[in-house]
Length: 178
Length: 221
Image (tube, rainbow over all chains, first blue to last red; front, side, top):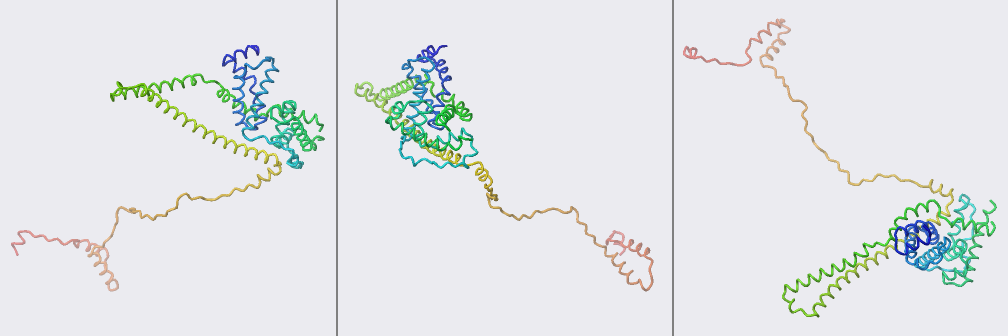
C-alpha cells in the first residue's frame, strides 16, 4: 500500500491504516522524544500526544514521499517534546561559560566506553545548551529554525551551539588520540 | 578529535537509542497505541448515559410531582426548574470529578518531578563513579546482623504430674515370723536350733486369729 493510500485511510479514521503508520514511525518518534525528555515515563506520555496530533492534523500533510512524511513527523515530535520540556521547567539559556564542569577527570572516565562518554558529556550540558546543540547537530536544524522553535534570536542559538561544542571538545579531546 | 568527526559521532550516538532503552520503548508501544486509539464506544456512551440519567431523574421528578397532586397545577416555570435542578446536579458531579482528576494530575506531576530529579542525580553519580570506586563502594558495604525479638520471651514453670509406676509394693513382715527370727538370733550362741524345724513351726502358726464358735462347743462350756 502506498503512503498516500495509507494516509487517505488514516484521515478517514481507519484503525488498520493508523496502526500501519504507527508501527512505521513509532521508533523514530520515540527516539526523538526520548532524546529531549530523557526518561521513558515522560516519553510515553509525549509520544502518545505526538501520535494524536499526527492523526488529527494529517490534512496538513502535503508531501507524501517518505522524506516528506518523516520531516513532518519530526517537526511535530520536536515541537511536542519541547513543549513538554517548557511545561516542566522553562528552558534557561545562559551565556555564562563558567557553569560548565570543564575539569576532565581522566581517571574518572577511563573505563567508560566511547558511546557512554559522549552521551554523558552531552547530558552534562545545561538543558538549554543541550537542547539547542541536539537540534542543530542531531536533528540538523538551521539556527533560524531553532530560533523559531524556541522563540529566541538566531545569534543566541549560534552562540549556545558554539559554546556547547567548545565544552564538548574540551571534555572529549583527551580520548581522541586513543 | 576533529570537530566534524566529533559531531558525526555525537549524531550517530543520539540518532538511535541503546538496546535497553529500545526494549523499554517496545514494552510501552501497546500502551501508547491504546492511549491514542479513539474509543468510540466510550465517546458514544457518555452522552447516552447522561441523557438516560437526565431522563430517569425527570421521570422520577414527574412521578413525585404527580403523586403529590402538584402535577395538574404544574406550570412551565416548575418544569423548567426541575430540568435545571437535574442538570445542575449532573454539572456538580462532573465538576467534582474534574477537580479530583486535577488533583490526581498534580500528584502525578510532582511524582514525575521527583523521579526526574532522582534520575538526574543517579545519572550524575553514575557518570562520576569509576569502576574502582564502584568496587570500593561494594567492598565498603558492611552488613550488620542483630537479633530482633518481636515479642517478649516468657518463661513459665509448669508442674506436670506423671505416674512413675502403677503398683507400689510394700513388704510388711508378718509378726510371727519376726518373733521367730528374733528367737533364733537370741539362741544362736546357746544352741544352734534347726532352722528348718523353726521355719516349719512358723508356718504352723496361724497368720490370722480365727475364732470358731460352734454351737456344740458353746453349749459344752
